[in-house]
View: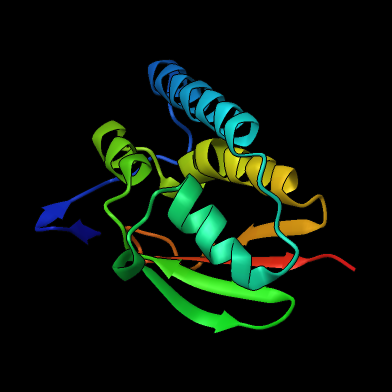
Length: 144
């Protein structure tokens, strides 16, 4: 696999040191998520608010880094192309992003979305995730 001219061999089963670093990243991101939820006390009632509140306010992504593939009354599908700190950390540790993002990012994103509205569901498409793809596809929808 080639990323920015480098060939990477990413490990889907990281060693103890890599796991320690990833769990530290999880703790830091989780603390940020908890404090953000307490400070903002925001709620969302429709998917169009998720784009603003979750992607732009919580994740602090720039509009040009979030490609909206679909937005409807009940569903939002995005592809993020931002300079991602979890991707950078994963490449540095040579850990597969399908492991690190599931552990670090997905855990906190689900927590924050539940704070915004307990009926929101977060799903990441692991067949479309960097560095295997040009962006990371995510789907957020209201459960019935």
